[in-house]
Length: 278
Ligand code: NAD
Image 1 (cartoon, helix red, strand yellow):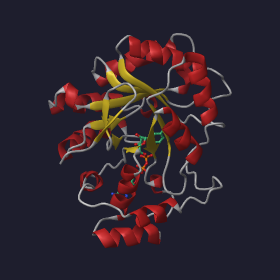
Image 2 (cartoon, protein in one colour; image 1 turned 60 degrees about the vertical axis):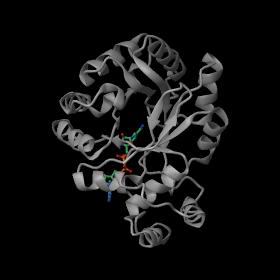
Image 3 (tube, rainbow, N blue to C red; image 1 turned 90 degrees about the vertical axis):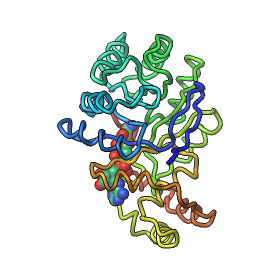
Image 4 (tube, helix red, strand yellow; image 1 turned 135 degrees about the vertical axis):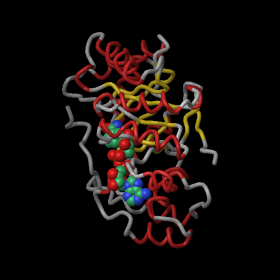
């Protein structure tokens, strides 16, 4: 199976479908990531705050997979945006991951009340220029934060990783990204299992029509919309299921049916709001 790649504004390619490890307990991470690599994932999304970079690093090392066949993302936590702390933070992450560089480094949240996210972005540019991350981007940034960092530095992030699933589609952020050559990455792509997405007829009927599972339909919806996605599961069978999405294609009507699931008033959000999170 070939996982399609998309090219970032840095010129580097990223596998459009990867594997996320949020809330994978540290003690299980080596096993879980080893299984993910066995079933065929080559793109792993972690973060310093997940406390499991060690396990990701151990799994990568024992897999024997050549470094240039892997795409590894990690993120700068909110309490390290000031001064030179981002440089210390990336070096600590690289130690834990047992890597010389990551493929993508992100500012995890803007935490606007502290007003340090633009400084953090300038440090991510230094990190990229020092070769510690091939590409750099942000997470949970709204258009006002994106405008600010581009105005301050002239550097456009390669990605914005945002909460994105059928009930919460953040169309204003997606429009900013499309206009500026930034790729959208969806976190919580399955809604984190927090609302009955899989039972919704727009999803369930498409699943029946394609002899697929509802999770596969939602992953396909993301992929066909050009979004980068990395669903999480600690079960090997589900890891394989979530990767097995290249044998069918949703119709334009099916896509439109899932597009219509966002109530449009922000009530579909399942995670924190970027303006409130510190
Ligand atoms: P998700 O939408 O991927 O949901 C994961 C849950 O969906 C699992 O716990 C499981 O219960 C269920 N699931 C997975 N596969 C399934 C299947 N085939 N059938 C039925 N149920 C299934 O949510 P997530 O893990 O929060 O998001 C994915 C990744 O995004 C994370 O692991 C992490 O890497 C990233 N993330 C980033 C941020 C951020 O602030 N940048 C926040 C949250 C998550």
